[in-house]
Length: 450
Image 1: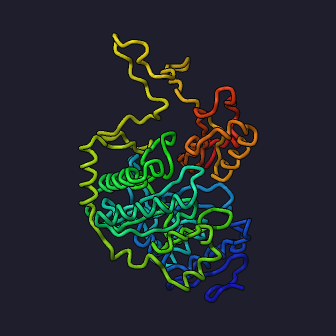
Image 2: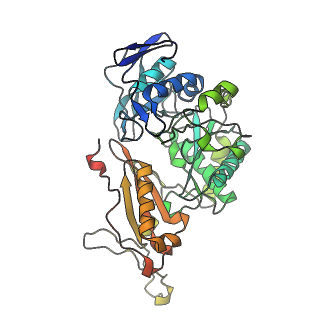
Image 3: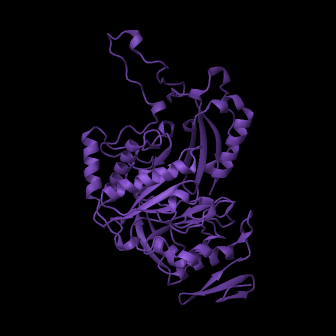
C-alpha cells in the first residue's frame, strides 16, 4: 500500500510533499537485498524523519552519492546538479581545490530531499558550510575512525574524551553514530574562520585526545602509525563531506547515522539504528540534535591550544593527497617509504639503526623499508574485508601474529568513485611465516570504474 499522498502511475509513484509533486521511478526496486527494503521504503523513511534529516543538511551544498542500482552495487559521486531538474531545486556554485567549479544542489525542504532520493542517493553528504557563505564553515566535525579490530566500547570512550576536550574549550558537542563503525561528534561554530582554521582546530582536538588516551586514540594520518581510534582532522578540509544525521548507509542492514544524547552513548549499539527501527525511535523521542543550530560557539580557545601545540614542536600534519602542498606541512610520504637520513661521515657503523634504508629500485621508485603488501582492492569496503578474511584463512600463522594496527584499510578516492584498499604490514610476522605478495583478492581497477 502506498502511503498517504502517494498514487501509482504506471511503474512510478508520485509523492506529494512540501507543495510539490515528486515522481519516484521504479519505487519497488530493491535497494537493500538482505532486508528487502525498496527505493520507496527509503523515501518513506526519510519523509518520516524529515525534520531531523533536513536539520542536518539544510541550506548546505551537497555532493550526490548515487547508488542507482542499490546499496550492494557500485556508486558514483556527482558534484554537478543534473541539468534536467525542476525550477524549485536550488543550487549554488562551489569552487574546489582543483580549481574546478560545480553547481551543487542545496536542500531546504522535504520535496527537494525526495527528489534527490529518486536519483539513487542513499546517504546524504553535505558540506560544512551554508549556501550564503561558502568560505566560512559553521560546523567542526570530529570523525572517529577505528582501525580494524577496535571494539565499540573503545570508540565510545574516545568520543566521551573528545566531548570533554570540546566543552573545555567552549564548544557544545553533539554525538551521532556514523552508520558504520565509528562516531561523529559535531560542534556548531560562528562563521568567522576559514577551512584552514577549522581544520587546525580539529587537529588540535585530535592531538589533545591522543595525549589523554595514548595507544587508544591517535591523530596520526599514516595508517601504519595508527593505534586505536583515529580522529580524522582532515574531514574539515575544504571539499570534504561526511554522511549527515539520519543518513541511511549502504550496509546490508540499512544502518542509520543516528543522533544520540550523551547519556545514550555509553550503552548505545550502532546496529540498533536502521531504516526499519529509526521511524519508531523518532516518533517516540524526536530528534536528539534539536537545538544544535542555536549552540554556536567560538574556535578561539582551540586555536590557542593549537598555538601551544605548535610552540611545543607540533606543527602541521599531512593533508589529503589531492590538496596542494601547504606551508609548514611535513613531507607527504609514508614513514615506511621516507628517505632515511645519511649518517655523518665520522659516525661508526653501529650507529645505524636496524633495518635497511630505502633505496631506489630499477624503476626509480623507492623500496619500502617495511614489509607491506596489498591484499585487496574493492569498490565496496565489505568486499575488501571479505578478501581480508580469505587472506587470513590462507595464511593463519601470519594472521595470528598481526596486531590490529598492522591491517591498513585505506579509503581511496578516484575521479568518479571511491574504493577500498587493504594492505598488511608484516613487520610483526616472523620472516619464515611471511607470505609473498599475491594478486589482490578482489582486484578492483578504479581506472575502469565510472
